[in-house]
Length: 140
Image 1 (cartoon, rainbow, N blue to C red):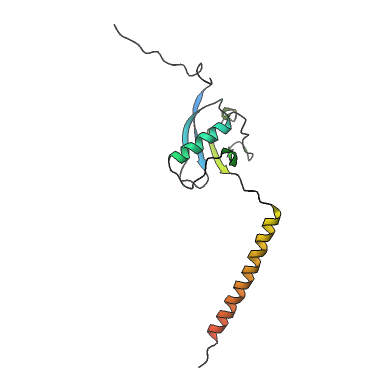
Image 2: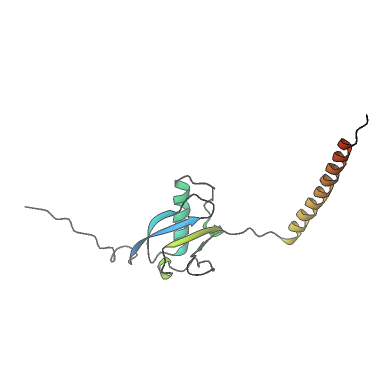
């Protein structure tokens, strides 16, 4: 008597939908991260999975684990970042790019930093110029 294993159906299980392999390229990393997702998974869940996989593999640069500070783009679909609440299968592509959101600073801090750099730059330039003159003028 032979025993047969029944195949599990992917469509009727947890979450339903088709599963497919996606590739996420992280800016500054050596290569893409690849893993299988359900087409009905939210973009936020995909970003979280990508960050966990990236950290587990010990990749550089270190990104952190806060999924709210990252954006997922589809280079083929356009220049807008994907909404964290849309499904990953709604885009219709399998290659994505993961970017860290730019840090927002207040305007006063930016102005203070620029002024500090200008003051330091002018002083160091003048001192370099004076030193170079002193070296060229030598008494015999």
